[in-house]
Image (cartoon, rainbow, N blue to C red; front, side):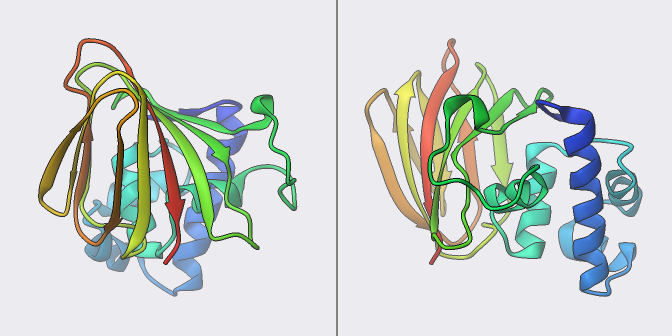
Length: 193
């Protein structure tokens, strides 16, 4: 399951935020299960902090709640107003050990800005699929730094090598896969529509 630096405290805040988002919409667990495709029991365990979400589960919840994963994680990070300078040692890291995915918020979301930057690392063979974008039309600029990355966006598959950049607006399912024998490290620049 997903894991973060300072995982226990962050997981508790994430669980509380997920419960708060559902309550704000006055949805039952059954309603959220129907909307997200996640079982009622898994949602209950997530909201009580008994399990940490995987990247795929968070992706489904972000779609239902219409926010990017960066924005959701920023909402539960400690601290108030994000500083204009984000030092490397202050960039939040979240891990999904099950999927082989590490996510660093290089430039976390800021209320006054429309974009953010995420660094992703996928271990060899890692494969993460998202059913829907969290925000339809979300602009992506994916820049591969090390390794090989296969991205499927809106039914088209692209193979990227170091230095390659793929730019697109996501309106449907997507998939990030490392077909290589080494980890792949890439940056994603996300811009809200």
